Image (tube, rainbow, N blue to C red):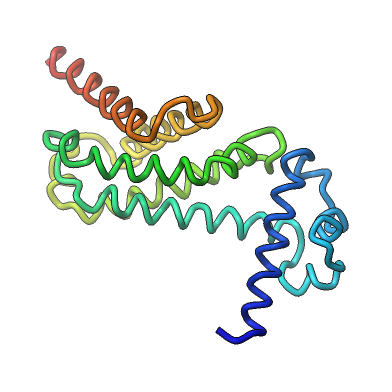
Length: 199
């Protein structure tokens, strides 16, 4: 990497971290480019060399967050086979995903708070749902045995999982990633057992 590109990368990271720092104490709507430039100790012109405006800055941070978590979802879904083997096969992969959430939790906590941009949880859910859908559609066995419309299945799974994540973050990560994995699997297992008893 050239010195110029490395300098640009570091400046961009500085702007992003400065913005997140401000976002801890101010709402997104009240933050100005001037605030960000002052925190980063750069001029406004430097900011505009890297971002169109504060919306572009936030969009890029969100997209990177979704991409990072999406890579973990790829790992989680790659070995998915069926509901009968899900608990045993997915435990470690689920723990990996929750570990990724733990790493990103400071950012998630801000974005999910009143300081974040309105609608973050909806954008998060949409990105999460699309990633899960793309992975599940690769699994022919899953598609052949699914007895409900895919969009309803995705709505349930993503809402349930993201609900756990949001609660966990709000609880200041009161459980370990492994404990969250066990909790998630136990909930899914409970639902499956309940449905089996009804049948």
